[in-house]
Each structure stands twice: as structure tokens, then as C-alpha cells.
Length: 468
Image (cartoon, rainbow, N blue to C red; front, top):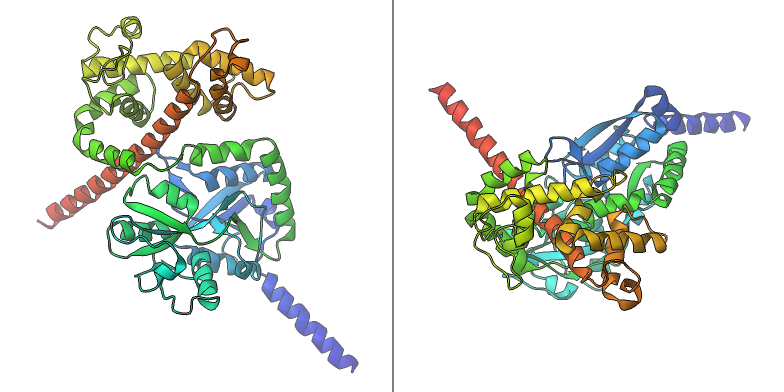
């Protein structure tokens, strides 16, 4: 009997030892000096920005956590969520930071950090092809989703609970963004995607529509192996401070804060203008942006917001040209002809750079740019009024998140009557900045796409010459 009990203990310890062999906890990570993070290349996770450096919401958060731990980060990029979860299960990474939904099935295998964002699963189709309004309408459609995903889990639940005829295909070698592109191209009828992914991708693929939600709110979080209890505690301690200090809100604002209600006509028009009008002025925007140390896609986006890249644009209030300069501003910036596109673009860039220079040194990027754009639209005096009001309301006068809350109050008498510059249509600069950020996002994607195509063409040309 005693021998049997001893044998059972040995077997148990062996099993536990084997299951934990590949699990690194906080102490192991600190000793090695490196945190291994599994993620994927996508705008909602990790990607290379326009300056050639890694960016993305997951990247920013991981770097903050790693800095607190005192370690560097090694990113392991996987193609699909299935690959990521498989690698995590095998111990190939310490955490998976890839826009992962916390589901009951996943909680059986992994443990999760606190949630950093709530999303809903959405049915996504092409607006001119099919428009299902309920789960029942999905029956008979060519519906494809990611294999072993939270999306396929949800479809299985629906099939079991009231929709036995629901059918769909699953793919293990494509990501959500790839399927969204296939929907846009008409190759499949519909797919499923999280709402924040849909918000981002509809800017590049304006024919997409999300006719209905498939779930209520679900949480996104980091996943880790169940044996890494101390790592989980480290993450929880870091996250509490990260959220309380406002850094989480700043990160979400940075990557998702400019996505307002989707305007299909507006975004579709922008895509047409990028192909039709933008090439004529692109070099002018680049030259002016370089001269005044501005991102050229930001300056181009501002020009689109001002005039839709119409060099002869005029308004009833007297502003003119691509950058819609007033006569006094044009004169101050050395612009002799506001309808000359190069002069207008250069004048607008110079004015924006000057506004940025007039702001307090305590204002850091990207807030500095957003506040300067707001001042370009509403005037520096009204921006200062908004900062004064923010201080009275115990808000941060140097944060765009705070100022965008305060600006609309400048149209209410109980607020503006005590301010130096009085009434202003404060909601206008909020919309102004929002749209410019959205347009810049689309322009950046277009520039990156054109760069990828050019790179492939040059590569193909080189190979052809070498063969000759």
C-alpha cells in the first residue's frame, strides 16, 4: 500500500515537472534579461511604422511592462492566432500579446492578464453583395473564419443553440485582415472580426460593412501559461499602475481614438482622391513637411481635410487654397498667392510648425501635434481658453484627451463667459483633428502599399536582369 502511494507521488511529480518544464516564470525572465513575446504583424497589434520602427498597441504596452521588469523584449512574429496559441502552449514564448479574446475554451489551457480593451465580434460583408441582418440570414452564405479562433467558438455555440443549419469554412493559414480583404474583393461573402479590427480595416477597404454584432462585449488580454503565477502577478501590478496613471487610456487614444462613426462616402472619396488628385501634390507635401519637420502624411491629411486637395478651393469666409489660409495668415507666412498650391502647402506647413512651437514645452508628442492642429482650426486664443477651463476642471491641460472633452464647452455661455476669448464652436476643432488623424491613417496605408508593390517590382526586375 505504501509502495503504491509512493509510486503515485512519483508519477504526479513527474507529470507536474514535465508540464512546467517549458514554463518560465518572472524570476527566470529577469535572470535571462529577456521577455519573449508572441504576437502577429497587424495594425491592431505590432507593425513597423512609417519611420521604420516597431509600433502598435501591443508593442507599446509590452515595452512599458518590460521596462518595469528591467528586461528587453524579443518579439516572435507568428502568422495566425492558431500559431500563437500553439507556440505558447509549447513554451516558445512567455506571453502572447496579439489582440486575444478571453474565452472559456482558452481559459482551460491558459491564464490571462487584466483586460485592456472590450470589443464585440462583428459579421463583416461587402456592402454591395449581401446584407444579412441576423444569424439566420447567414445560412447559405459563403462564410469563412479563422480556425481555432474565438470567432469559430462563437459560431459553434450558435450552431448548437438554435441554428443547426449554420455552416461555415475555417482557414488555418490566413489571418483576419486577409479574410477581410477577400470579403472586399468579393471572393467570400462574409467573415467574422473583432470590432476594433473592423474599425481599422474599413478605412482601407471602404466597401466592407458590419451589419450586426455576433456577441456582446468581450475582453482582450495577454495570455500566458498556467504555471507562470508570479509573471501574472507582475503583469497585474504593472497594469494597475499603467491604467491608473492614464497611460492605458493614452495608448488606446493613440491607436483607436480617431475612429469615429464610419462614413463610407467620405472614405471612398478619399481613396479616389488619393489615386486622382494626390499624385499631383504629393511631392509638394513632402518638400514642405521635410522643411518644417512634419510627417508628410499628416500635412497631406490636413490638406485633404481643408480642401480635398483642391488648389482653387474658396469658402464664404474668405479662406482659400489647398490649406485654406486666411489673408492675414497667408501674409504672415509669406504666401503671395493663396491659390498657388506650392505656396499654400508651404504656408500651411510653416503655420502649423509655428503653432507647435508656441505651445508649452511640457506638451509632448503626439498631443503637441493634435493641440497645434486644433489651434490651426479654432485659433490659439480659444485653445488657451480650453486649457484654462481644463485646469479649473482638474483635467490635464497638456493632454489632447482632456482638451477634446473641454473644447465643446466653449460654445456654452456658462463656460465661455468667464474665459478671455469668449464663444467658440469648440466641437469643430475636435472633429477637425479626428478627421485628419483618420485621413492620415488611410494615406499611410496607401504609401506603405505602394512601397511594397514598388519593392516587389524592383525585385522582380533585378531577378530578370540577372537571368539575362
